[in-house]
Amino acid sequence: MAILDFSGEPRERDAPPTLETCLEPFLTDLGHLERLRPHTLRAYRYELVAAAADPRFQRPLTELDEVDLEAWLVRGKAATSTVGRRIATFRHLFAWAIRRGLCMQSPLAELAPLRGRRTLPRPIREQREQHALDVAIASAPPTLPADLHPPARDRHACR
Image 1: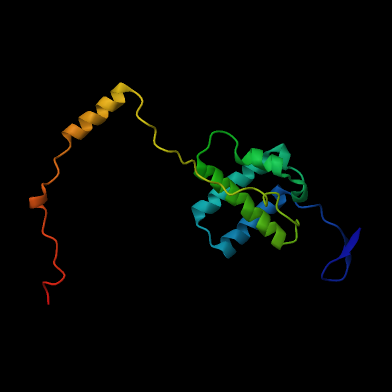
Image 2: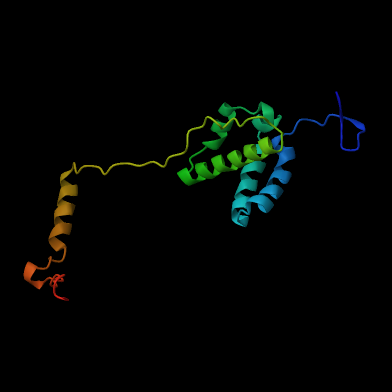
């Protein structure tokens, strides 16, 4: 298929964009348009270069799927903040690619927002834990008796 460029001359269609071919233009645009900090751009570059080397990502952006991306995002033992940065990297990439017309939608569009792991306190179940708590309470400084607290201000005293 031939398409016309701005000169009006026909040319052959370019190869479909891949992660590798989009990497530098994306990071350049991101640095100028989003004004991200250099450390953030460096982290994005590291993540994208590593992904571009993976065989799952050596195909056109339009062919990347949610399964491969999710497997990449949660690979290895990583902190919640690391996984969050990985997700942000690919969300930024696909938003940029959509604005540029390189793909129509993001495979991450249906991905639920990342939530940090929140746990409730554990109940005291062992005698040694109870003993440690009792010792801590016994060694804590005493509270002040009621007559040693500073007096409360009287709202009517200034009238």
